[in-house]
Image (cartoon, rainbow, N blue to C red; front, side, top):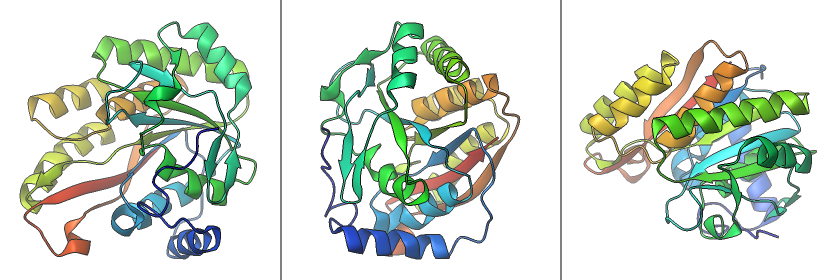
Length: 266
């Protein structure tokens, strides 16, 4: 079992406190949930991005099967690392979707089961409590991605879409990403909105090219590119920005901020 590693750091470690905090975030959401194929959700500590992550995920109907794509911040393990073990948070244990995992391994030869990549990584874990509160029958497919070429992103997206189609039923892709890191609010917002414009246009190649050419420190650009490409193969046509904020609104420091965005793709 993959046990929680950032409980009591990124979010409360007490089941009751965590549930109460998440439900408080959800109560502030003004939208009725709708069907979506993918979302982009931030993964910082809940103090900084929890409200935006909650508002983004609450804006969609969460199916029982969710594929979570996160960046590999630590560089451990395979480039496309799949976890095939159950995951534990203070809210309980989340099983993996073994049917979809088997299909992915059959249809995606580049995908490797590698728990070592997941052991220190927080980008998937912080999404789970929100999903657990919204979908009590949750099953997940956890994928951590290192730096991939755009062609590799296309190949992975094709495998994901093929596996989802073969499995049948409803599935959601969650791309876990923060935006610019440790820039002034002005610089972060300018750069991040270049990336968000490409996401709004559903142009994954432009997003990939813009982030690297403009040196935008968007840690989850690869997960977001893959999510857009896979969602398009499944019929997605538009992306909607739910919100954008940065850490400075909590810390009071607008000179060194981390940006956060929530996007729904359908």
